[in-house]
Length: 197
Image (cartoon, rainbow, N blue to C red):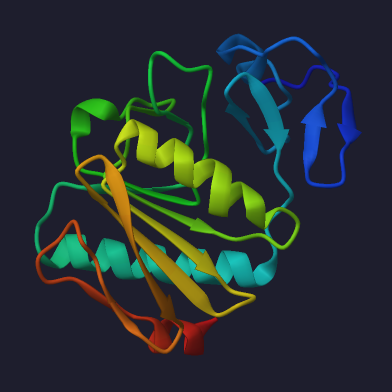
């Protein structure tokens, strides 16, 4: 992204670029560097700045995941807020809060090329629909193996595991221990996470 002038309009559910024309990857990367945005199905969606609780939860989860990978000498990478081009067929680049990518060939300096193995999105108060509906459908379509939606306002986590090209869902609270499906023996104790945020 660059620092060129950029016109936006408020829509009440988030902020979208004012245009009837579908946007491209080039349009996305020509946006100013200080604009947090995603390109989904040709539409640029501006994301609100994260709040303190969001960032504290993100930091705790990244710490737990990195520690597990380090202890087990794993090859997966944990990349927060990293551009991800899910499919070559779509005009879509997302920035998941946390991506765990186990195929090093998918990672370039600029972005992840293809579906991460595990994505965690932390719900923002301004646009929860984005994570609960739009991204759920998108991540299922491209084959993300595991998708977590962590909602600090509701103190809830919804976990989706990909089974036969459809997500199987389980709901948890911030009092639960949640097993990570892409690993055999990794459990995150959300009561300990909650105490730290």
